[in-house]
Image (cartoon, rainbow, N blue to C red; front, side):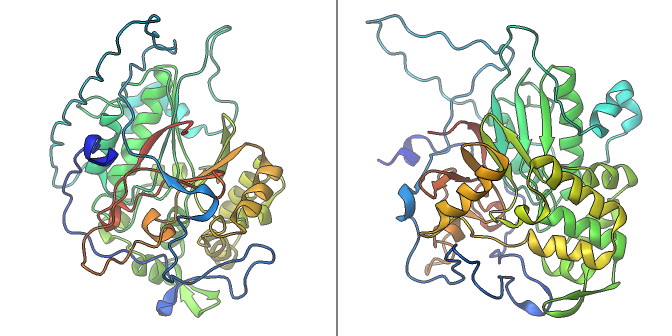
Length: 401
């Protein structure tokens, strides 16, 4: 019996049929990869018989973390010496999430004074009282519109209750980006994250999010539509690229001003408890600044003041991937850590089945994703479980060992 058989994790809800996910593409159907290998990084664009799982002590973490009480930051009681071990309590089943024909956008007018908390993404975050430790830290991989799966995964970790409200006290929760596209309810996902941001702040914790390349693409489609932009594949447009990469028309139709304001101010990079949080597994962040504030300010300035071509170039850079896999992957991670701090990179963007070379199984069975994937000499943690390709939507408590 394997660890995954003993600890299977939450049963995934069924949001409808999934299609085999391709990596993000630019118009005309070509995969986006750098035209030349990045110097010193051994950039590999192929999917050969090598699976990369042997590089740098790569390994999976089974998706089984005990549900704990989040109302207190106190450490759990340790059994007294010589006391018999108690069996782990079974994880309660996740109740079914009620379906809605058209989930409404949350009414921000009902949030009162908490509205500013939703809009204010600047440092510093709420600090604990003197002598009080911060709450536990969690990260969420790419969601891509799969709201039911997100609710189930958050509930299984004890972060929300059965009604979908924050129940984790002072816990800290970071989403790694890519809320929309490919799945059935991207706006519903955004609404939930905004709601949890307000509820977590009221409880003394926080819920934050990074900007992914699909946020850049979605906002670009809404702002620039079919306006031509210059790309390496020729003349393209944000709207065409968004549709090509799983854009859902009903998400665009339900996008409102407060969604745009919130998405446009998301940071691109963050540092929490020695974990450098990124959306994309790329070193392109270094092209926007030598520190975390510089990178975030540069991206925000670009989104507010620059034109479509500059916006497109930012999307193109953050669509790069796989910089941390292969023999030179640890070198790329070290360059980011040297610039921005931290001891490990935690990222989404590249589905784990692609990182491990198991995306296209000959018998057509869904890829097996037991949990987060640790690789690059254990310097990188991949969190995109490939929910869009019948993998798994991953929520994990850091640190992972």
